[in-house]
Image (cartoon, rainbow over all chains, first blue to last red; front, side, top):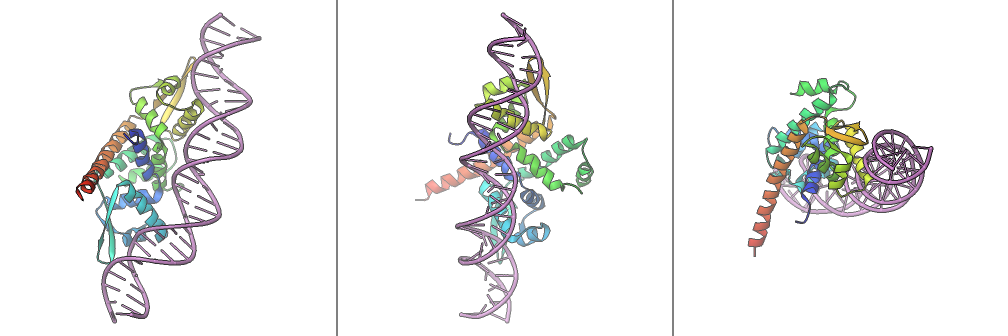
Length: 109
Length: 109
DNA sequence: TTCGAAGTTGCAGAAATCTTCAACTACCTC
DNA sequence: GAGGTAGTTGAAGATTTCTGCAACTTCGAA
C-alpha cells in the first residue's frame, strides 16, 4: 500500500475544491464539450482553464480527446454527477440559516 | 449575489480535502465522539487536530458540545455520509482505470 | 486551591496552490 | 508554405494552507 486510502480520498475532494473546476464538471454533466465552449461559459483566461483541466485530468476525473481542430473533454465516470448532487444537498443543509445562497441553490434543482 | 454558488460548492469540497479531516468525518459517521477518542485513532498532534476540527466547524459540517470534562463532536447532517460514499465510488472507478493502465503498461514489452 | 487532563488559540516558518505571462504545438484554410 | 484559431506548458510571484510550538482556558479530582 503506497498511498493511504484516506489520503487518496482527501486528494480527490481537494481536486474538486476550486470554483473553475466545479463549473467545468457541472458543464460536462450534460455530455462532452470542447474547451472553446467551456471558455465561453467560464470567465477565466485560456491558460488558467487549461491548468485547471490538467488538474482534473491528472486526477482521472475527466478525459480528453482531440476531434479535428478541437480538444474535447468528458467526465471519466458518471459517478461524478452523484458527488456533485451530494455536495449540493449538504450545502443546502448547512446553509439553511445563512443568506440568499440557499434560494439560488433551490432554483438550480 | 454575495458569494457565487459555485464558489460555495468549491469551498465545501476543499474543506473535505485533508486526510485528517476525512478521517474525522469517517469516525463521526458512527455517532458523536470526544476529541480524546479521535486523537487516539488519528496520528496527529492535539493542536493540529484542533485546527482541523475548527475548519470543519467553521464550514458547518460538524458541531461540538461540551459534556463534562470532554468536548464532543458530531456530524451536523447525515448527508455527509452520502458524500463520503460517493467519493469512495469515484475513487474506485478512477483507480480501476489506473490499474487497467498499469496492466497495459506491463503487457507492452 | 492546586494539580493534571482535555482542548483551544495565536503565530511563524514551511509547503502547496493559484494566476498570469510568454512561448510553444497542433490543426485547418488559403 | 503562411497565417490564424485552438490549446497546452513552464515558470515566477502572490496567496493560501499546513504544521508544530508555546501559552492559555476549563473542568474534575485530591
